[in-house]
Length: 245
Length: 222
Image (cartoon, rainbow over all chains, first blue to last red; front, side):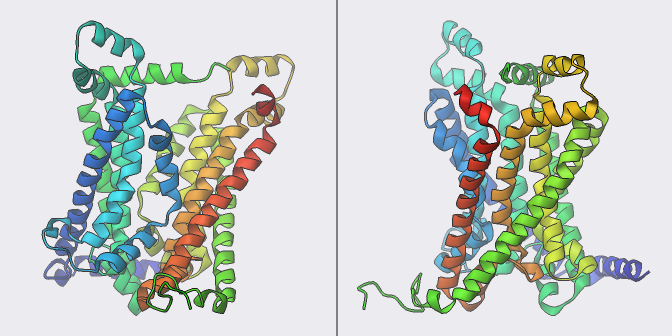
């Protein structure tokens, strides 16, 4: 009964009209959250996918490309956000307004690179020797082999990397609320500070919805972009890649 | 005195460290306890789930998406959702960290169990092994490298995540990071980061050792 009453309060909190207007309203917080997430995902994508594709095509740097994800896992991301604030301050350097918060943006870029780099590298490297040989035999240039054969075949894996990176970035951006940049998690931050569990829970619901939404959007993109033929092909390759013993 | 500036405003103020030995020890211990409890609970839950999922496709089709979905919930949100139910403290931290460890643990154990070759299973059946005995004597030993690899990954990522639990008044070494942020004081921040990464590396190396110790046949093959 107590908890039901609590949930009713959360509902009132979520639907209160002043929650949806002004400088600390949900639309503003959401815009902030999305801005820093999209900016860092885009920059991380540009830093990792071309590099991973090139390394995978040339089959060099595998140790780095594969292990970067494991090293990244060990570093506490919240610490990177605090470091960002220590080094760059809370306000944006001139020309970096599009990042939302430069001190949050930079750690989020670093967080986003490993999954996309590793997946692109592995996907391109394992695209299939027969395919690459056939393409070479047909007279395709190395750039064309990468663009028209290896990347399309690697696409499911690359998109999985993008999805992992985005889920991580959207989730970690919430911590920026604890280092001075408002995101959808700001009600959680404030609620914790003043002991208002209704705001904490309400904020958590909003953040959870955003994360599920972001993940679903990329799941749909994944389904739309990758052709069914390739999906079936991916499955056979995976079976063959399994060790025989 | 040292040539390098070494005071409360520098990145690290060495004199702070011996003065805060007890605090460092307490936070390091909390960090290890939170990690240990979460990975242990995660393993206890994940292993039966993986065994059931390996036996029946229906179970896999339900369990894998659920544990994957848990992983997409941001830790700040999950802790926020747990807080009104559990209150502050160790409970919400361990519950959240356990939930995050599940996706890695279940996936690895499932992959390991599925990788057991069908002819080996047939041979065990032919020798008259019961289902339980086959599981314990054949399937689990063969899946062990994948299971331990999962525990390794889960441990390292849990060590990274523990720092966030400062928001439910826990945090282990994350307490130093939060303290450094709040007081604009870099020494605890640096100490927190360095010790947390060092702990992750140490745990990883330790588990590599465990991985080798529990799979002696792999060494012989090499």
